[in-house]
Structure formats: structure tokens, C-alpha cells
Length: 195
Image 1 (cartoon, one colour):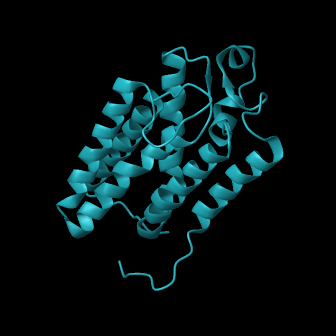
Image 2: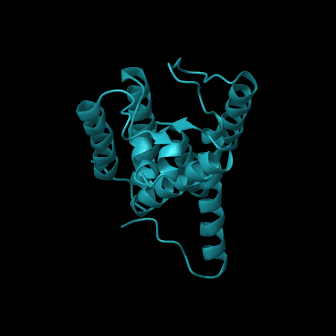
């Protein structure tokens, strides 16, 4: 792959625009869009998707938008066709965790965003084999372990109780995607990363 001289991460910017639009139109913690287990059980299935785009406040939205720009934007630079599968698998894993753990409420993108991390590290490792990359993976796991032990996020305070397990669920989604890519490549079906 040749380095791109000028690059605009269109998919990533559209995802940020979606989150911004939801925040501007509905405000913080929209009652009709957040994940509420009792509402999902009563047939409000859209909450499985919309809850990831709702935020508890401007700080929550801002941190998720910055993380989305960095993680998804970088993944889009190297492997644009894997941005949406990474996000989709992250959302799926977080939703499975919410259901399995009987979580009452949830909103935000941070859990799903963790699904970008391992695929991005894996792609960069295949390209550069920098020793810093395994350290980044280990540091992200250490951060999640620290947050889990304190039941508080490291970088923000929130009006809602944090659901740290969502970060682990998203991270696991990224791991699954890496395994799928590796299996495809081993079966002599090289993975195409570009569009």
C-alpha cells in the first residue's frame, strides 16, 4: 500500500456527524433512544442501535468523537472497508454484554469504539512490526483492568454510572475480527484492506 498524501476519512466523519446530529437533536441522554432493558423487552428494539449514538453530556460526546476520529480515522486510512465491520462487531458485542449482564441502562460509543483498537494494532503490526504496538495493546488492557477494579473510567466523570464491561466487550469484538482476518489469510484467501 502506498502512503496517501492527502486523506479525508469520509466514513469516520459521517459517523461523527451522526453522533453530533443525534446529540444536537435529542440532547443528553434521550429517554427514547438510550438502551433500557425493560423498553427493549417491550418491543423497542431500535434502542439496540440508537443507544450507542446517545451521550450523557457534551464531555461524553466530545471524548467519544475524538476517540472515533483517531481510531476509526486511522483504521480507515489503512483499511477503509473494515471500518464499518469493526464498528458493527463492537456494537454487537456490547449489546450481547448488556443483555447477558442484565444491564438496565446504557448509552455512548466508548464500548463499541474499543473494537477498533486491536484490528488497528494488528494492521500496523503487519506493516511496521514496531515493538510499541504490543505495548499499546497491553496498556489498553491494563487501563480496562484498572477501570474495572475502580468501577470508574480513567478519563472522564459521568452523571451515569460507568459500564466498564462495555469496553471489554468492544475490545473482544476487535479480537474476533482479527481472528477472522487471520483465518481468512491462512486459508489462502488474502484479506483486502482497501476499497
